[in-house]
Length: 309
Image (cartoon, rainbow, N blue to C red; front, top):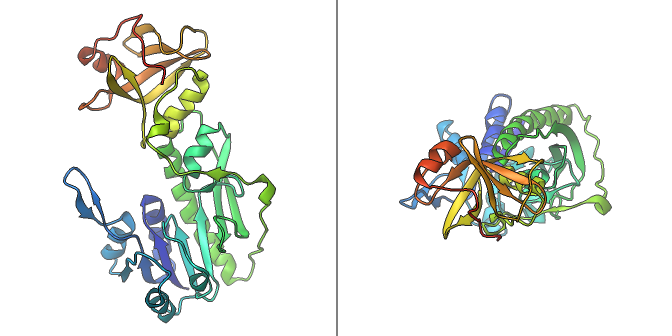
């Protein structure tokens, strides 16, 4: 099939790599290069890097709402557009250009977790499973008819990164399966139940600040959900400490934010209910370290107190 691919981050690059093995990619749409790194130099997206490696035409419009952008896409005469975490709105005119419309690879079991951060929101909510939905795109936010769904369990130690990697692989195989079914005219659209939909809001750095008054289970999920971004953090003696990994201590309790145990394997902090053992931490200007190494640089003792929020 003649495919236009639209995507930007690593999640999308996994799908593009899979498509290259079975289909003809006539063009790749990706976000404009952005400043990145300490030097804030312009950097190509993972999708652009992969496309250039394979000699694919790359288009980087700032919007798809202009007549020029739509004319360019129309001239590609594509059978279908595959979209994965692209980051730009596709207006109705663009949705209607490919013969079979636009198929989206979404990292949740729609209609649950429509929106920008479905992986993180699923972990935060304590969901036991998530998955991939291949959806026929319409004008709404992840509201189109579902064409294919595959389920992925969420492990108790999954972070946003590990779950992302599982879903990226599943998304790549799912879009290949969907396109085969499309060619065989065996895809059956299923409408979403809007009454059961929920919204996965974009992540902000502020929400990753730990409120020790919460249940330890909630905070532990947040530590996993915000790894690798924006990373949970808490203030100790005026310094912002990042928490990369933590474990539950369901047999301990105390005043929220109070350090109740210090050991090589972790720093135990009381929460609103139960306690949390901080296992991998990062001090300002330092690297993420196991607790034993962290304690060599930042002495922490029983009775110290993390700021409540």
